[in-house]
Length: 305
Ligand SMILES: Cc1cc2nc3c(=O)[nH]c(=O)nc-3n(C[C@H](O)[C@H](O)[C@H](O)COP(=O)(O)OP(=O)(O)OC[C@H]3O[C@@H](n4cnc5c(N)ncnc54)[C@H](O)[C@@H]3O)c2cc1C
Image 1 (tube, rainbow, N blue to C red):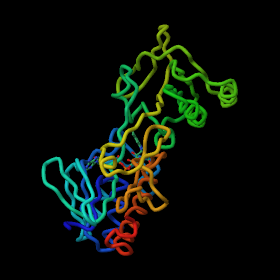
Image 2: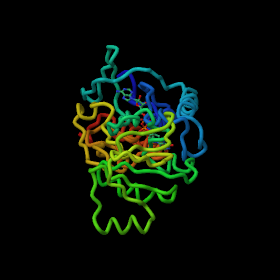
Image 3: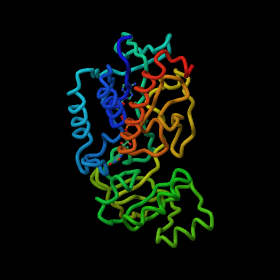
């Protein structure tokens, strides 16, 4: 085998998994195409010790720490295929070539699909947002909107009044029940049923949204629930089971981040219904430790088979 473990995806989850394996002096190859999910935001918030630093800066610091360990190798390459072979795995690279390892950690994240509305995609991560915990504080209690796509809009509109005066645009996609209407009123959120047709202001800033009846509503940010898909179908190729989450499918894992396929571990947004950098890193720690334990306690993948 070329490596003890191949980690596919080198951001919060993958780097944290590789760190545990490196500290156990195991050989690790980290494959990464360097497109972390939060790359659209200038700053990242809530990650302990790194609050307010840029995603690339945080990633660079984590990679530099890992590079100090002699058993870690990095490759800026995309994995395009993976399969089990004997007591290990074969991974094919986009650039050609195959590599082998005794265990896999999948940490390649998810990709977002946004609503198709003029001016929306270019503001993603700056004034079009999905997570108030990540970027709500910096809005400084200015007016915010929620653009409904499904029931998630209710959840967002209930939370957001803690960050600023909130308008829920139902967009013909979400009809609140009478209980939900009462709850929104109690939170001080406004309901607007006339659809938003475009976003206004010098992009990537947002100043207002334009409605079909010609009105404009001033807003500093518009929150949407992204729809997510895994960034690759490698888990599918390996036969890992999936679950349905609030924004899309995610990988089924146990309490130690083991997927349903023996020898394959997964961590981060790819394997969680709750996307968050700190949670991705924590899950990566578990996945790295679990992959190491699997090498020790089940070297031939016999117990799990
Ligand atoms: C706009 C935005 C802002 C956000 N802001 C915050 C914030 O402030 N705080 C916070 O806690 N969370 C934030 N998040 C959520 C955060 O980005 C994710 O929770 C976190 O990035 C998940 O880490 P991860 O390691 O699972 O995946 P990712 O960070 O998405 O990394 C996956 C890595 O895998 C690589 N990859 C993908 N496919 C392959 C392949 N086939 N082969 C090799 N490599 C591959 C990618 O290039 C990428 O580098 C934000 C999300 C968005 C969309």
